[in-house]
Length: 416
Image: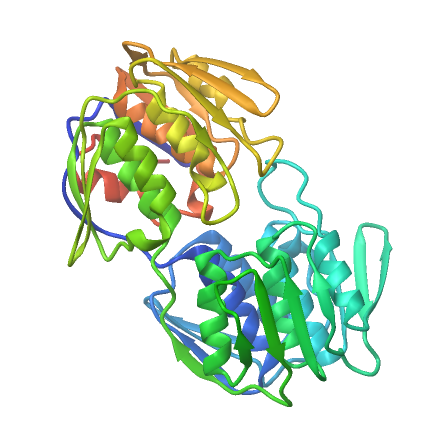
């Protein structure tokens, strides 16, 4: 199996281009289930999660073709409404086909989705919203089946928690529902805004985009569209943290800081120098000091960057406290960081990080996507050799992370 092998890095220096957002692309791919015409997406990242979604859609009868970073998805040949369990169990985002399938086929069946084991991520809000729109939902033997024999109807839906996936699923379904759907306490993440813009190009009528209340007026049909997804803000944040951790000077080409205000604020508080430029974001390292960080729904500090931020704070002067409000099991990187000499104490949803003079290289395992990124960051600052195993988790969300870091001067390689 592949692994990353690295040594302590000099200050990262140079330019690197940020990829397009995986978390924006996956629901956009599911949109092909709602039209007989084709959707053309540009800048699609080469990731295992994207491959998994493409295979799932192909099993349902969609035609998915790819040339370099351009992808065309055509749903005209849709011939199924039961998602293949082999793909569903590999990826959390597979649940996003339920809303589109219900809207188009009036029925949908799939297993409970898999993904990183970072805590319970219930889909009850997805099912609640679809039920309020007239779908009957049955759960049995690890599967969920929903039917709307007379089609989905517009409804007023209040989400008990601003779930990104539930907002996306309900919003997609509502575009083809009869009448008007109102989603209150909707998630406001930039990826949802991006999805709404694609749906609007397909003929959907959505107002309140980017706000906590979304209003969707159902239309009879959607058509094809062309779209370029947003830059990946989590990859951007990860590379920013790597640059700061090594005391580097890096320009992230194509990066958009408007979706990372909380991260940039905390990094500046920590000692990094961050400036917006025409080409992207420039990050320069400084003397790092401890800061307190709380993960929150957008526009707060993203849970997906909590683990890499923790790795940076392991070498910062003083004590930091990280509080994880989103997932209850997202400190899985802690035992691995301790192997490298980190001083971290976990108390419930709080992790107390005491900066140390030195981390040392070790053989560590990526337990999930973002924990893996944290171990790579720690390896860049650790004395000696570090080997990160189980990097399949990392490659679900980062396009050649080792290559990007190596291009900036890091002594890191992907080896079999």
